[in-house]
Amino acid sequence: MAKSDKIDQQEAAKALADTIYVIGGKWKLPILHSICSGNIRFKDIEESIPGLSHRMLSKNLKELEQNKLITRVMSDETLFFEYHFTEYSREYGDLMLKMIEWGKSHREKIIQS
Image 1 (cartoon, rainbow, N blue to C red):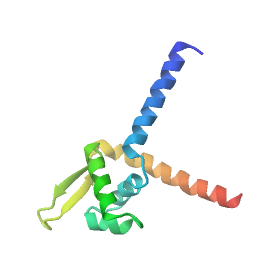
Image 2: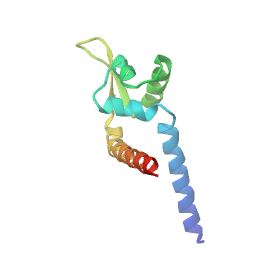
Image 3: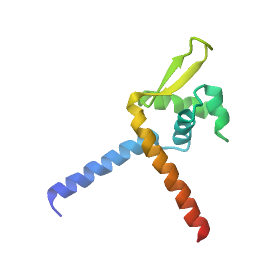
Image 4: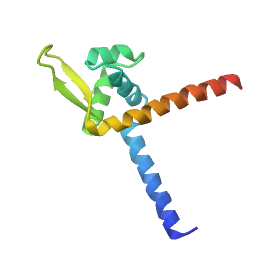
């Protein structure tokens, strides 16, 4: 194996670890999907995800905001905070849709076997 191949594999492993760190865990992807689906208020996000506690939603929203995937903005009309994707995270939406497609396909494959 060439030295550059080993470096490329190490860089890829680091990039995957960074990605998993940012979006890993049980709740981050469902939260992002909920926001992507139009649930922008805390209560709406919480109600759209079965089993998600108030505390875990709050914790994960803070982490997503720290990692620049969402922003928290006070609505002038409702005086509630709203959560929105950042421009930086919009490209992530395509990846999330692919993951959903793969998950559905994988579930069907497992059920069939």
